[in-house]
Length: 166
Ligand SMILES: CCCCCCCC(=O)SCCNC(=O)CCNC(=O)[C@H](O)C(C)(C)COP(=O)(O)OP(=O)(O)OC[C@H]1O[C@@H](n2cnc3c(N)ncnc32)[C@H](O)[C@@H]1OP(=O)(O)O
Picture 1 (cartoon, rainbow, N blue to C red):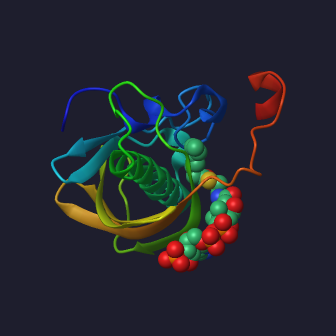
Picture 2: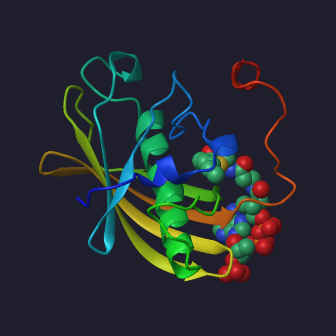
């Protein structure tokens, strides 16, 4: 995994509150994604409240990891193509247009999960990312995210962060 700034730490402050990946959302997952060669990677250990059946991870959490690793990977890939300095400048903002998830095997609790992304396409305002989620050697889910640059009309709500998160 490459060192340096996580993709999500490059989000502008006014859009850093996402439940899955916002660094300013203290109640959230705060997923961190990085380049690993041409692929992208994030690691996360689910918390007890992410339980489905005792001993197994809630599928919505797995989907959230795919979602936010996908949009983060899109931000990094799209910014790279646009010539943004990924180490220091704010990354371009991407939102989820489509999220597909296939659950291949039960996801065990108590294990660090690895999310891997492959950038399938960068085209105009759109980035497509193919992903896997693994628990140890087992691939437990596959996913696909179509991310599109955040529309101008989707402006962040006014007011303090605490109010926005209520
Ligand atoms: C910045 C950090 C934020 C972190 C975000 C974390 C992830 C999130 O939870 S985001 C929240 C959930 N997502 C949303 O609320 C988005 C709501 N949807 C929208 O705002 C719009 O529909 C949006 C932006 C996705 C697409 O807008 P629009 O400008 O109409 O796109 P449009 O110009 O038609 O399409 C662009 C490309 O995307 C494709 N596309 C658009 N929607 C979809 C879709 N649902 N499925 C597949 N492809 C799609 C189009 O086909 C087009 O591709 P191509 O260029 O190859 O023809």
